[in-house]
Image (cartoon, rainbow, N blue to C red; front, side, top):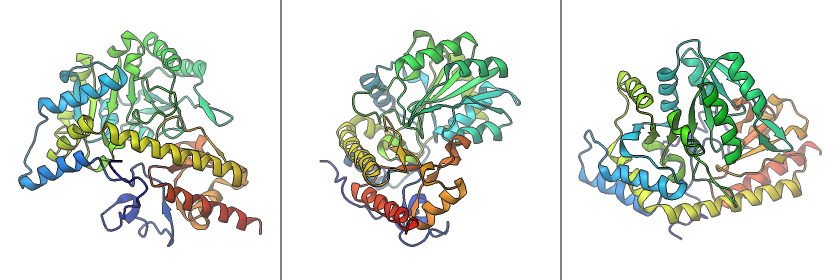
Length: 393
C-alpha cells in the first residue's frame, strides 16, 4: 500500500477545523470528530512531493495553471467517466461553494427561484438565500432507508415556481445515493423542456462503490452539455480541501462567459502554486492511492452497517452507494431532535453533522464521516452503543 490507511494520524495542533476546534466548540474530552468532510489520511506520496517541491523553491508568487494541469484534469474525467471537454471549458475557483454562489449570481436575478433536493448539502441553501434568491425544495423520498427523487413533484415545482436554476448533488451528500442514468435522464428532460439550467456538484464523483457507476450529468444526454455547469475538485478525492482548488466545467460558451464575468467582478479565479501542483500530481499519479482508500472506506461502511444491525437495531443506516459520509436515521431512539443532538455530543461523545443542518427532512438523522481509520469507526460505534445502553439502565 502507498499509505497505511490503518494509521491514526495526529492532526491536533495543525489548525485543523475538524480537530482543533473541539475545545472552542465546547466538546468534552474523548470526543471523536466525524463531522466536516475531510479525511484523516495522508495524501498520495506524489502529491506531497509536488507540494514540497514548490515549498522548497521559496518563492510563492502569482501563478497560472500550465497546459499540463489542464491535461491532467481532462485525462482523469475522460478515462474514468467518459466526460469529454477541452481546456477552454474549464474555469478555476477556490472551492465548490464559491462556484455555487457565482453561478447563482451569473444565471439568476434577485427574487428568482433556485431548486434543491433536501436533505442536501446545506451551503446550497445558504448561497441561494444570501444572494437574495428563493429556495424551492423538491424533497427526496426516503423508501426504507434508500432515497429516490420525486420526479412529478420536481416538474411541478419547476413550473409553479418558474425555477431558473437547479442545483444537483451527484453523488448525493448526505444520503449517499449514486443516481442512475435513468434518473438523471428523467430530470434532464424536464430541465431542458422548461429551460432550467443545472449546476451539478460532482465533487464526490470518485467515490462510487460496488457495481455502481458515476454518470456526470453533462454526459447522460447529448444536449445536456449546453445547459450544465459541472463542479469538480480534487479536494474530496485526494484530501486537498485546504488548498482551495476547484475546476468548473462549462462547455456552453455563453454560460461560461457569464460565469467568468462574475468571477472577474469578485476578483476570484487565481489559485495558489501549491494547489496547482497538488491537483496536477493527484490526477496524474493518484489512481492507485484512491483505489486503496476506497477499499478502506468500504471496510468502514460494512463494519458500521453490521455493527448497527447487531448492536443498535433502533438505528437505520442508509446504503452508502457513494461519498464517504454515512447517513443514519436515529429516530428509533425516540428522542426529540434537540435531545438527540445533545445525546450524540454529550453522551456518545461523537462530533457529527446533525441531520437538521441539511433541512427539516434531516431531523433525527446524523451524518458520520467514514474517511478515517477503521479503529476510529470502531471506537465511535462502541461509544454510541454504550451511550444507548446507559439510557436503558
